[in-house]
Every structure is written in C-alpha cells, then in structure tokens.
Image (spheres, rainbow, N blue to C red):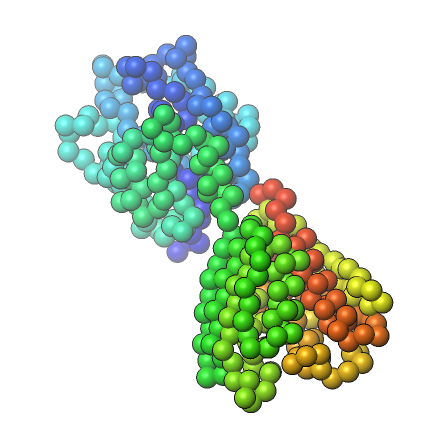
Length: 356
C-alpha cells in the first residue's frame, strides 16, 4: 500500500473558473479564473499537496454539450495553471445527467473511490474545495475537510490561510506512577505561560521557555516530590518535547536552526537543529548544587530529555560565576533558539532529504 498523501480535490466551474449564467464554460470569451486561485494553488503545491480535479459535466460528449465546446477552455485552463507550476495529479469528470443513476456523480465518490481503496488519502490534511452543497457532501463522504469557495463561501486566499497557516497547536497528557502531566502549546501565539510543578524555581525556568520561545505554554505536573525532584523535571521535559514535536507537524516552512544569548556575567552558547535526530551535548559546571528547589545536576538532564522527545540536536555550553544566572541563561538561550527555529519562513521543508 502506498504512503498516504495530502490531496486537494477541487471542483472546476465556479471554483477554478467563474461560472456563467448558463452553467457551462462553452467558449473562450467566458473563461475567467477565480480571483486569487493561482496564488492559493501555488501555496498548496509548495506545501506538498497534490491536486485532483473532480467535476460534474452533465451530458459532456452529447449533442447538447459537445466535446468541442469543453476542450478548448479546459486546455487553456490547464495551460495557464501549468505556466505557474500548477499541475493536476488526475482530472476526474462525470458526464452523466442528474436523472441517470450512477455512482460517480458528486456527491457520490465513485470517481475517487480508488484513492480510498489504495489508501492514498491523508485524511487529516486532505480537503475538497467546491462551490455547491454537493461538493461539501462529497468531502464528507470521502472523509476529508470541505471548504466552500465563492459568494456563498470563502475566498481562495481565506481557504489557503485557514488550511496552510493554521495555528500549530498540540495538547498532551503523560501519566506514570511517578508523575501526572498535562501540556498544551500554541507555537503561533504569545501568551503568559501557565506552569505548575510544585517547584517554584523550576516553574520560573519553564516560564522562560514559553516567554522567550514566543509560544503559548500551559504545563501542570503532579510529581512524587516527596521522593525527590528527578521525576518531575525529567518527565516535564519529556512531555514538553513530545508536545512541541506534535505541534510542529511535518515542519514545512520552519527556520529549523537557532542559537544563543548572554546573561550578565554568564555566557550561554546554544546550537539547535530540529533535525528529527535526538542528540545532546553539554559543557559547563555550576558553582553550587541547587538553585531554589532545583538541583543543578538536573539542568543538563532536562535538556537532554527535551531534545530526546522533540527530536532535536542540541549543543549547550555555559560559563559564569552565578549559578542562578547560569541556569536561567540556559533556559533563556534555549528558548530564544526555539523561537528562531520555530519561525515560519514559507512552505518549503528545510531539508534536502525531503523529511525531518
């Protein structure tokens, strides 16, 4: 079975080209592209979508609607889109009249049934764009999101924004015998962090990650602090890293890399790569064993655990005299690096391998 792909199913008349009063594009002088369609389709193609045209053309090929009336505008449409790098994986056309029973006329899904049989549809990300209720029913029958374009719906720019610029959010719970953790992040919203772990200084450090990382963060942890701090710190890092990775999705458009900041007498150097390959290197010695309730030996352990579930290569080096500044500098520097790496820079996947 082939790997599921992101598919954009799109109707033709009223969606790609304006639909005249007689509901058939039967001459070149009636050919008009919908506003914004080229820019929107280019964005979808750049984001890794493959396009499938699905159209009801009643009686196409009969005397009432000869092929000679359909083919020239259709050719022109494909040529115009092709000049912009927009091509269709497949063009599916149902030619039956509405009163003729068949399984291929939308909203039935006979035309696209092979995509289901072969497991080709990434249903979480695929969608159908049409201008009629039957298109939305087709989307529902296919199990993908449906968007209505045109006067009774959204513009192409709005659809592209809603689908491609959707907030990168995730929620996660992690329950073990040692900790109960809930995490929520929104990488595209800045908000005051909400953190509760039962460890005041550790809460303050996690707040630095959200505040300086530029993302909304909510994290609550009930840990076995009566034993010691280790499980609370480690499991919070594991849960946060996994939640961030989930929010990043396929990582298209991210900057991927980040680096560091100083803090008073302390210097922290960070090299971060959201590579998908967990690796952590640490250099530094803290001048005392604890800052608040947080053992300083757990600081590198926190970042090692974070890198593990985030799927990041993280190099962290700290030097200084004040342990408080050194620990806080580590969290701030990593946070600023995350902000840089999470930043959106278009729709391209930043990897020559085609995956991160």
